[in-house]
Length: 178
Image (cartoon, rainbow, N blue to C red; front, side):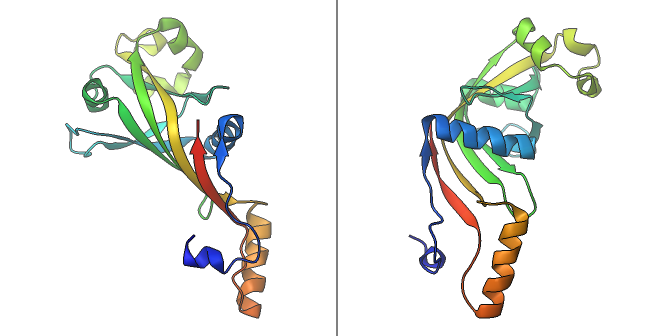
């Protein structure tokens, strides 16, 4: 246990698995909406790290993106399908890290389900653009850091803790297994 956690007067660790882990990532990703998707074997100047907009998190915890067939990330994923996703939902809370396995497809039905007109900026021919691919990321393991009761309660606990000289915050963290 980390030294700062030993100073906590209440439990601030909760490891989650299965349906509980899926629910946690769905809630946190809904608030974050975007992430850094990190691949191995970088081919481009981003060193394998780039921001991505999540299109959906389904009931199995699968995270869906749209990407370009000719992107560095797609080429990197063909060599090594393991990815790391890093989310931040808020300035002070809602941090999430997920290791997963990515699959690339050009499933037209799935593209249609995930399509949004704002994506035309990158896929100029619309949802029928032949460059669109679907990235399906299946989570394997992860870790989260968040607040138990929201920013207002977390802020109040921190303020009281500072006044009385005690470590008080509303944090919760733990591993996620799927």
